[in-house]
Image (cartoon, rainbow, N blue to C red):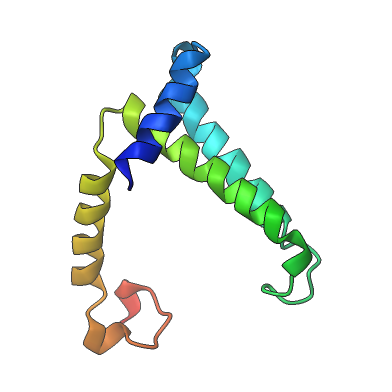
Length: 110
């Protein structure tokens, strides 16, 4: 993730003295709530991708989720690039291209 964006998110929080409210439990709740708001933009859409009129709402909800994830990583003293890289390696081992290519099954079913 872009370090400048991370700094801006953390500065926004710090400028408002909100760090005191950002404990892991409440950040996890906030991530889940924002994810539900993103999901809501697809509700009653007929087809999952036919929601162009809600694109701005989707962008904003996704941004909220990502910002809360940055705040969670900071609160837990985790490096975002490192944890994503580690998870990608793990997933690459679980989902070998030769087995997973074009297949939506979970790794335990491949």
